[in-house]
Amino acid sequence: MNAPVLAPWDVFVLRHRKPANLAIHAVSFAMFYGGPLAALGAGDWRWMGLFLGSGLVGAFGHWATGDGGVSVKEASSSPLVVFYVTRMFLRMAQGRYGADIEAAVARHTEACKHLDDVV
Image (cartoon, rainbow, N blue to C red; front, side, top):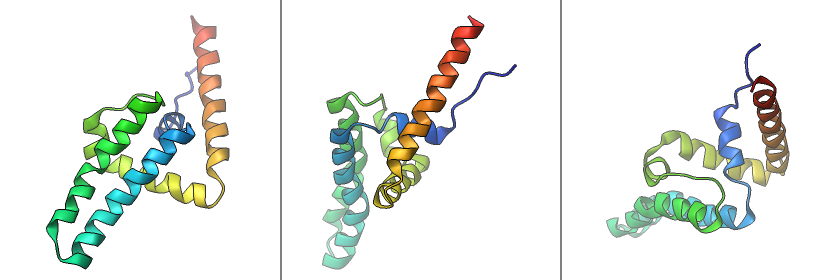
């Protein structure tokens, strides 16, 4: 019997559950998308500093809230993280992220039970 494996989305959701971390990520999200838009709108490349610093702000959210570990490299260079953060905020806007959290926690609990049975 194969052990249940969490999908990457589940792992991401499990590391993004605390309201304070989500608020910090909202700032990071605004910086990521807002920096380039502000740079284009203002005609001033210095606004790109917001874009470049957005990953550090997201990593700070994990450090400050203890909501799962994340490396600065992962937070600042992974295209998957950009996709998942965008997906997370879209799911929040749809009122569906709470269900994602519940489902990820349930799958994690099941995976852990399976490990206890094996050991």
